[in-house]
Image 1 (cartoon, rainbow, N blue to C red):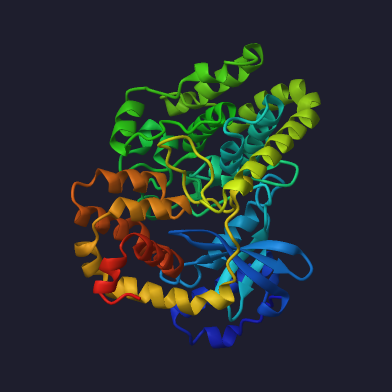
Image 2: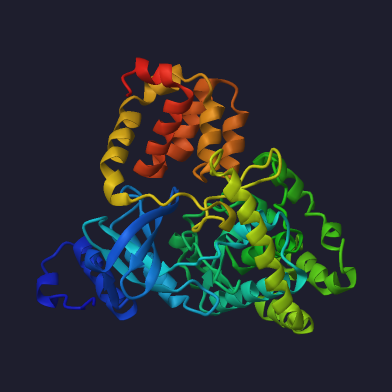
Length: 461
């Protein structure tokens, strides 16, 4: 258990940075009261990675499986883990992913320990079903996401990256909001200096038109717009503006283009009317005309009450489809570990948990760390040679894309570059530089598969 035994007399002689660190730890003692060490944990398995770091599924001796998010060592100050866990604890709700505490041990320096969601995310469910879930379940998901967002706004937080891959599902397909790396306190309680740091990170398909300028200041209406696009995705099972470049999406959104609502009305049109009206209000061009989440929840609660009796049959239908897809996928695993996707589709951002129909092999971290570090060091040391000598860059990008290490917009950006050298520089800049040892090791393996002669010529083995 974490204790709050900061020596206040000693703190007077410490540097300001040290004092701030100790104050944060002391505050965290009141929130994340549970500390996790190596003696209680085993079977570390990589289940997702990206610029934020790496997420592992780990077996805890009492809780069963938990998820541990370990940031990249160079991703920020040492206190970042405490600050994010602090935010997550303040956001606590039945519709928000539960944080259990802080990991500190020998395996990694520290991480955030969270509940593990076996059913993946709305994004992975869409992939496995090859479309939307049955209407009663889709409406329940929409209502639960709205309820989670209502809670976040009530405690003065924004999500700022609301999309299908950031809504996780428990065993009964109940939704919980996750991935708050982009969350922030709403501007009503931010200082001017905090607001001016600006930037609009996240997934651009879910950005409102006013969010594209660099000086945009995030407010609640940003999340409302994103919810409208997410609602469309839940009801259609599709990705908005799929395959379109950032510049084109920005241009068309500013002109008033939105996803095609007719795709939500192909079946049971009369049951869709209220939800379609709600989503179009949420993505209104004028932020002041978008509803607050209190109003959104009132609508989704009413629509859900009408469809509530169909939930049992909907879940059984989903389980049946997932079982069929898993059987098909199991027969294909010798050829590929990638989840089935539509032709020419590029997967969304890395998700915390893999799709049901295509779970990645579990990697024993304890036995892989040394090999990963060696491969990562080689990639770093030979960066310029790799940039100059690699011939088939897109084959490497595709290899990383299959295992969720290249984001959708990154894929499009790399592909748009004219020369192999420019493509490779973009891959290093957007993926390898921030991805850490795990991503660099996977890149090394892709080089070994697609560029063996080049790799051998520059000293790889």
